Image 1 (cartoon, rainbow, N blue to C red):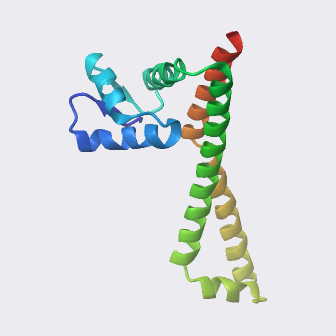
Image 2 (cartoon, rainbow, N blue to C red; image 1 turned 30 degrees about the horizontal axis):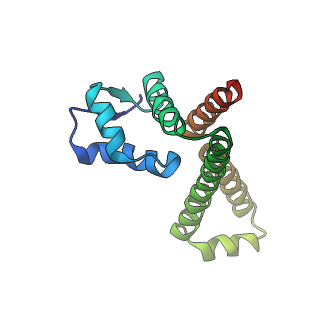
Length: 158
């Protein structure tokens, strides 16, 4: 079930995550977005079509003030930023996982000849791979890639 990410009926603190993500991912000012969303009385779920269309319109509006070269650079910069944040998040989760578990027992299990320790190690390795794939192939990545593709298409039509 998709969660409600923005509603003009919600308190500002509940909407802050949406604005923070917009600022971090697309460098869009909170005041401009708030005015647009309140004027249109919008409410949408995370990664829904309405969410996509709203972000697309906001980014396109921001880009309308740029020339073609600035738009291309803006998109390229956003791609790099989104990629870096995705891998940083994946690395952060893996580090937290290892620091939260007993790192010394993990290292000791590497030296073990016990079949049970080796099976546990294999399961742990598979879990880490699954966690990494889940983080790097998330709905947010799909959403951002779709948005970047739509914006690039718009630029190429100019």
